View 1: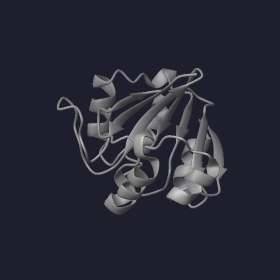
View 2: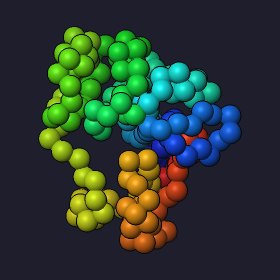
View 3: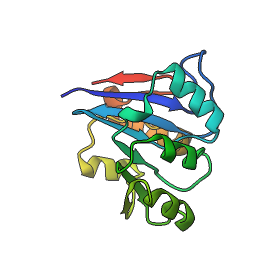
View 4: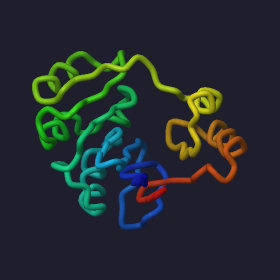
Length: 163
């Protein structure tokens, strides 16, 4: 099984053709699924990067928002409208009700309880490879790097990982 991870938007840039900025978005491809994870802070930058990286909205099978901060949900309504109706939308419990309501008329809403954000939880979950970014912060990124060593990947806007 191969996994491809493409960073669409981040505050660190790996590809000078792309726009960087505060926020985060990635496309995760595996087993025939294409999961869009967050949409960054700037819809224009996200949209431009998605076009350059040839992200096709009609091929996205799942949409996930990690949390409600504005640097992760840019263009929420526009993105929801571009996706195929009925695909799953995963949001955390505290995600704004208004956004959940707007999306639930088009997508299949699924509310998740919590996310694992620390190295110990990742190890306990059996996570074998990590590529922390943006919201992780430098101290946590260093902790991941020290713990995961050769299974730690440095990423930024435009990074492609293939396992």
